[in-house]
Image (cartoon, rainbow, N blue to C red; front, top):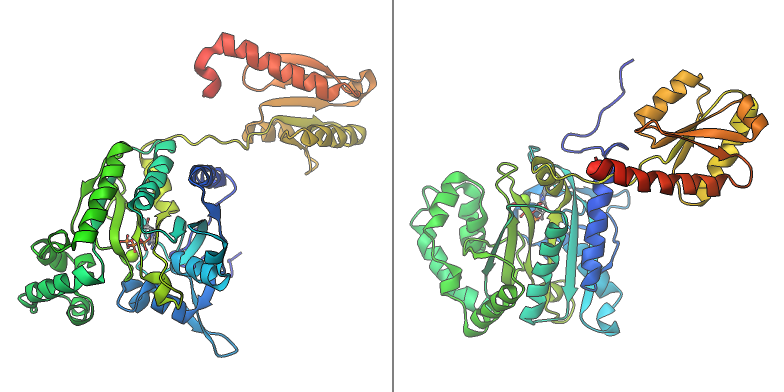
Length: 439
Ligand code: ATP
Ligand code: MG
């Protein structure tokens, strides 16, 4: 039979057997960001196109080349979100959250859509976790934001992730810098790619972010923004570094980082790894003091970051970091005969009410096939119910790993017997098997 269609190029399915990996990292992100006071915001997957055009910036690659934009039946132009910041900022403004006290701290999990060339670490639908903070100019907020990202990576035990930071100044100090950049790049007009030639007029800093090898080679010799910072930006940047130092967060200053959004100001940062090939940026963020005004709000200095979940999982995979699977089946109840089936159905419900994962045959298989299934799903214990067991109101529970057997009562004592069996079994195996328990 031929499938009528397959998944769209650049998209991925997360299958039941691997979703625990996503849930694990998502939980860590929720917990760690929660410690810093961030609460989740959920916004629509599509927005009016102008939100991204303004919020992400007309001269960015994302807006110029990568957006999934279409007209609705009502004739409106809408776009699938290419990132999470613009939608969160729009929601904050629309609900006037600034009136409820500052700063506003929001976290998000979003699927993003960018029409890019699919390759390892670069998809057309991908997922981000991000933090947004509105209503603070203070360098403490910048440092805290970076610390929040760092603590997520620490909890996930990720190694060899470099934190690179930079300051790209404010509109005032940047005017000088743009002039210097223009002068420099004008000397390479014949070599720059077409996109960069147009950037030269509109936003020369974008050239520093170009992925073409020729442009990035030329960019290496360009004037550095850090030499053009005004006093305030310079002091802000130094202060961020002092806070990072006091938190023991290691970083390097990389003056070539400019980030892909147009409205970044002052602090920008990236967490980069070399272990997953060319697409090594796992997390990017910084300050965007002009964004809220750009979207029609009042001046509300803001900052945030986004991390790519697919890339993060690739890093963990590459580094052999084991992710615990909490979805393990506590008990598989195999049945022989209709009455046993009914009893198993009832017992399974009893254990589930006490938060245990229990499965029983729902296919109508023979005993051998049921046991094979129990093995396949990695059930910790199994129990066989037949006429004999029902008659005696007792059954044997088997530890699928050690083979150890324990008899339990099938009456109102079943739950208690099961719990006692499980705890004593765990205790004794702790002593007998030592560390093997975690294997
Ligand atoms: P890159 O330089 O890799 O294109 P970017 O600057 O476009 O990244 P951001 O817009 O800052 O990326 O997005 C934040 C994070 O989202 C990235 O650091 C990366 O981990 C992830 N990401 C971005 N684009 C993709 C994509 N097409 N596929 C998978 N993950 C992505
Ligand atoms: Mg990109």
